[in-house]
Image (cartoon, rainbow, N blue to C red):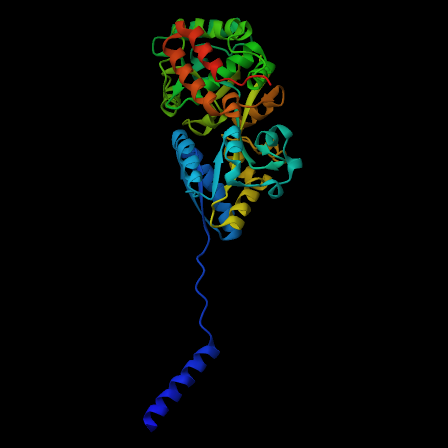
Length: 404
């Protein structure tokens, strides 16, 4: 009996002692963010990773960067959001209409940046019901046709100042035996051809036509589109001046290898060629506009680390973060505090050119939805069957915006 009382008392003492010491709190996991982007090219990945490395150094927050292709991005996130999940905490994407459509699954970011450092043209496309859902991080300048100055010098070629001179240049390039075609056509996804066509829309129809097509106040079957823009484009396609479309990264390599004479591409091409001092561009002759497409950083509602994700997006919106990639090249910073002299020469020439014309949004990224996929598919058809131009424009018009 005495032993039993002793052990009961001992158990009570131990219990009280443990209660007094308290149980240690469970160890909280360290935050680790996952970021998805479309920057699958090695130069782009490395440049963005340099930005993320600076964020990690400053905050101690670890970030994993996953790059996926366009189709994967477009399918993955709407599907995951519908199930109340997300594979990423932060996403960077250029499709403003897509972001607005998904805004019910995103956290607002307006308080994370200084809106005075950006233009309304940067912010308005991703504003819904008075809330900003995307922080501008990267602007892709799509200024014109890229070429190798050394190749042009070897063949005594000069960039054209008028559209007639442009056609003459294509004829001269077509006479060079080692070239497969004067112009490389990128594909693999829909945007390389749509970027090219937008160059013709703005170059031949003016920047206002691009805006009118976005708003739906001009039909794709209108004469100003069919005759003034697609008429000359079809002539060039039928003349064989464009290559057969191929994966766009491969086509950049082929341009660098002098298989083609030029290629319409955004300024990211600078970081993709072997010698960035031997790449330059000329704008569409006598153009009055240029596309400036923004990549926006968004925060998913389903992140496990909302504070840390917002901290990353706030950092990406600063001039400090944007200067890192700008200094590397192949990038334009939408933050107005980033100075022009920080860019490498080729990128600086793009930035300077864009100050001389009207910058307009990317057409299909701004419209989005069914229109974008229809636009991409029909342009692929046009490139292989230019005689179907009227059918192509009618199909595009079926999914185009209509005036209110």
